[in-house]
Length: 197
Figure (cartoon, rainbow, N blue to C red):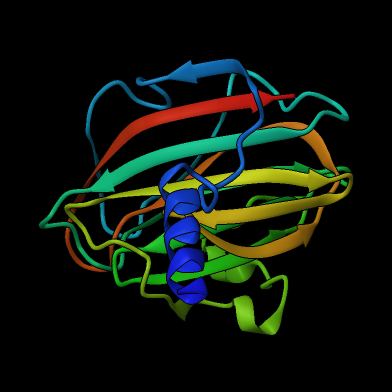
């Protein structure tokens, strides 16, 4: 009986949001039209970077939230992600691909690379790795980055808690994208938001 009651209490807590990703309380900025108001078509191997118009508040607990969707017929090699600028000017990129892979990369501050693979992974196990929670082309993926404590940012992908990065944000943040290997790929930026406590 105790096991049954415990299971019911756990189910109720989950239903009320106990397992949901954390989110800072106050909305600072939201957009359904950034970095593009409409679906964009990426040429094969095309890459790009966009910086958000509102920086991460200095010293505050924050949450970045970006949702986008590759078209169902997109080249599976297409990818997108969210980046945060570190205090030294480097960019930490949290990305995933239409093939169901995810990675976290450290791009040095001097010059933004043509290929994300030119940036080293923050950890060996954070190279492009298959991950079952990455949704396929045709479905939305949601990337959230939350400062859990000073100097540490946690990645949440589609509501699932992933790795934590030692990171002291400089303020700038944005998105990165890449077209597929052989065919054009349509990408729809659905929503971006910044919250702080």
